[in-house]
Length: 121
Image (cartoon, rainbow, N blue to C red; front, side, top):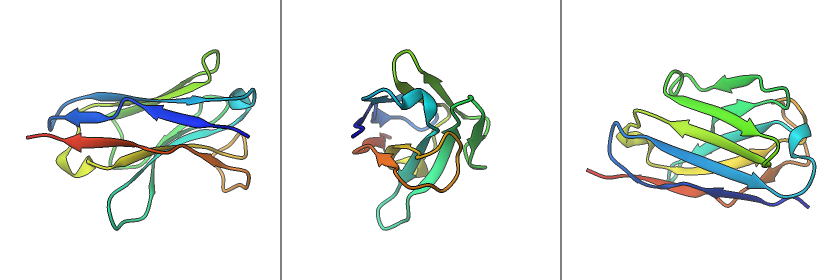
């Protein structure tokens, strides 16, 4: 069983930056694709950024050029660097370990508990 623990959420001003981290337990991290999702109240969870086991990345159109996903296999950790945050991006951010090395629909996925990013005025 894999456990994913997100951290790094908090208050951020519009236009500010924040880095989220997701640490995974176990030994399969390096073989799996990882993703960051976000979910606003009453809305579906949406993919923000993903990274394959081979470090290929993908981003939603809304965050391209502002967010960067990266991974450190030695630390079993995936990161999401968020710059120029917008007020509407105040959401709960979740980390996902795919059941595959690629960013494809799969079974045997794992989710973290989420970390709150809150905009402050």
